[in-house]
Every structure is written in structure tokens, then in C-alpha cells.
Length: 291
Image 1 (spheres, helix red, strand yellow):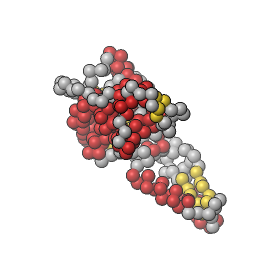
Image 2 (cartoon, rainbow, N blue to C red):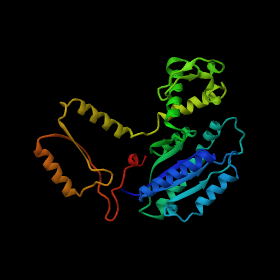
Image 3 (cartoon, rainbow, N blue to C red):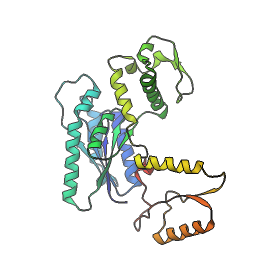
């Protein structure tokens, strides 16, 4: 795997920044060819605890610290009504920072990491636009649980497809049945921000953007569909599946030998194949494996 770089854009709250940085560090420990740049949005909500945490990470001498850097973005003096408006106003700063990163890395070394994607906070989904300008995929870092993600997507779906406005349930005991939750619940106990008519459209727009983020990528997603379609067409119990785990990789000659044996066996097969690692390193995971 060639050297790769991810750009993280967390929301500027303590719970969002800390969790994003910890995930970034986890990725760095798993993939030694990866580096991460964390862009800090300069919002008025950033307090001394956030600043202290960022500075402690900058001063860290951990094994991954050389591949983890932080960049403070310029403060926007414009008075904005909502956080989502603030995020939109930061797109130009993010673009400029990433341009500087990619240009300086290119000049400094021929072996510099290649920008491979953006990891954007659940509240910063509009940053997908910047990733699109650089021609790289975006990943949503959702700081809440899967059940709440399912709830958000459910609300967006019933609003867009069934023209149902959940803000009308502000004082209602009518129950919502959400697939990601075990029990139905009264609409009036939804998060308060979703029951405020002035805020709901922005929340809805942000949630819609989740569907634009990369899960397995356009090409990989299509490949998966083709694989599943092919499997469905095969007779029951006729396909051999080969997967040698996250550390299982083979040399080119070994791959040829296994492929030859499979062909001569006469059995249908599906093989999950990894690229071999460089000498002395474990098999390098793909970005999808890391997430």
C-alpha cells in the first residue's frame, strides 16, 4: 500500500474532537503507511478544555504522533445564525488548508502521502463538497450510536417521501415506529432541535448528505452487487469461499498456484484476495478495512 493521507474535519466540540482524534490514532496504529491531518474549525464554542486537549496531542511523543498533525483554521468574524451556516462558511478555509498540505507534501518528498479521503463529522456533512473538489471520497464519522443514525435517516425519509413533518409532533403523543429502535416512542420526545421549525430544515439538509458519503465506494459497491447477483444465480452449496483473514496475503507465485489449483478443482469459487505487504510489515488493509 502506498503512503496515504486522510483529512479529518471534526465538529469543534469536546465530545466530537476527542472521539475523532482517537479514531484517527487507531487507524494510524493499524496502518503504518497512513497519515492524518485534523482541521480544527475555529468556532466560538471551542473552550479552554478543547484547546488544552489539542495542545496535549501536538506535544505527544506517541508512536503515531509523527503521522498526526493539527491545523487551526482562520476565525470567521461573520455573525452567523446557525452552526450549519458556520460550517458552510468554513469550506473555503478547509479547501485552502488542504491545498497547502498537498502542495507542500508534493514539494517536500517524491514519496509523500497521497490524499485519499475526507473523514467529516456528522454535523459537517457539507464538507463533502470540498472532498468532491479534490476528487476523493468522503466518510461520515457519526459520533452517536447506530440506533440514532437509523432514526435520523428515518425522519429524513418520511419527510422527503411521505411529506410528513415531524415538527408537528411537538406536543403530540403519537408514536413513531423506527426500525433501528426496539420500541416505538412519542414524537414529542424527539431531540428538541428536530422539533424547532427554524432548525429542522438545516438538520434535514445535513442528514441528506449522509447518503452521499462513501461506504464501500462507487466501484466497490457495484462490484459487491455483481458478486451477490452471481452468488444468487449459483446452485445451493456449490461455491467455495476463500478468505485468509486480515493478515493473509500471498506472493504473486503463490497466488498463481492457488488459482491454478482452484481452476483444476472444477468448483465455483469466490476469493477475497489481499495485496502482499512490504517485507517486514503486516498485510496492509484497505481504507474500507480500516473503517
